[in-house]
Length: 361
Image: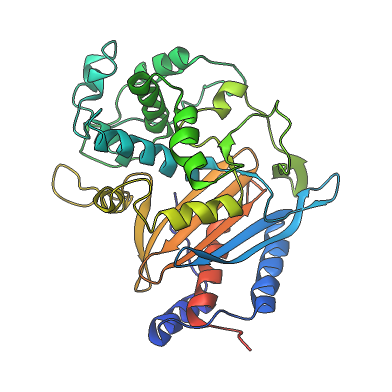
């Protein structure tokens, strides 16, 4: 999670957008020139950019290379790894189960994990969704190259003491969302990825979004990269099981994310009241908003007078960003295949260009 520090030009663009209201789209070359310049500055091999207004895709463009070695260009169809942008899908699946009465947000998770330590009894599903349950992240000695079963992973999570009393603080926790994926499996009898496929991806026509697999032959899959002493290297590998956890292990394209964005303006997946709950900053036990400005799978902030619901992701040589300026009905998605990339910076600047109409003819 992060709150990007904006350059003055971006601040001016967004402020201008507030004054102008719904401004026309910027000239396409102005956006392309900015993205290309930022890619060169950040040394990003490839970027996919989506801009949508009111659920309608108005720009879907690839820049640079999806695979540097084969010189394969990024296209709108190119698949990137989601990183933690995948958490919003896990949270949506949880809310589907809540709406169906199969689970309750304030249920203790020990209801679903009776073998869990006693310290988990005060931890609720709501706590895991909002990163306020005291769960931590993968420990420093965690072996990312070892294959684990779901039971193995749960045992590791259960063996880590809570960092603070549930509801007392906020601390981003991948392990909390990993646990939510196991909970979905226990409640439905299906692997969480299968539920996402059946209940979200297929109904929305997100034909290429899927759980990651480096073994499968998958058309249009991008390669991930990292910088080592300034030199471009391939991503480091992890075990297959760690590419299937509910903390963010998806492949998706900007074309599929356009369908996802459009669905969020409707009640195709969830009632409006459920979506609004996901997009509300959760309060701690003392009644104050959590320091991460986090809801359920989304961060809720205010960018220079514009309400912003967003999330970033990072995994295996990929960085991703989805930014929804909900009051302006503008969404910008940036997918990049470099571990050190800052897609949030690009998304914020591009949003400023569209909100202000900068560079239009």
